[in-house]
Length: 199
Image 1 (cartoon, rainbow, N blue to C red):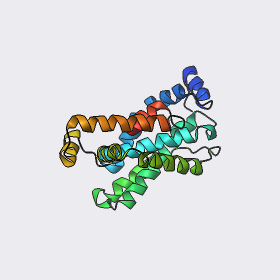
Image 2: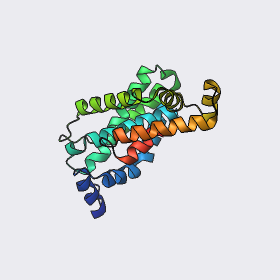
Image 3: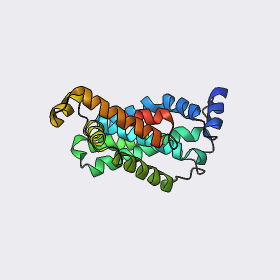
Image 4: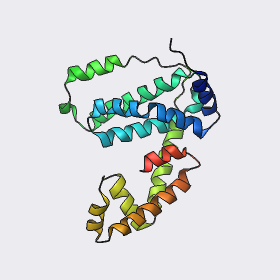
């Protein structure tokens, strides 16, 4: 059985007390591993990054339902695996994969799921709706720039050319969007997660 340091146990206890610093500790500890794991399934970094972000949002949403520290790693990998498999099916990208290799990856994911973990899908749905509404409520120009940069993965120069404005103007609209979203969402998500989610 894996052993944990006193520092890890302290952070786990603090996480269940809604401590953002404790969440930041586990975010930094597991983020690269979860992202790398998702990339092995998806083979497309932007989509893998989105799944990784959603995985950590779920960790924050369900922090009170995880009763033991080893539940954190189980939760992260299990949720990420489920979302990756859904993405493969939904996006109809099975041609990217050799089915045998995919099955081997699935079998390798023999993580122990704690019975004490109660996934709070309602809270997550409400959070997703809040994020969507917050984006929709942005000033029109800021919303257009944010959408093109965040969801279409376009660079500032590309956006400037499309909108017939300067790069400085694009940067200003993006700054406005990020400030508004961080204020609206800071009550619901840790700052480190917001920064990663909105970058």
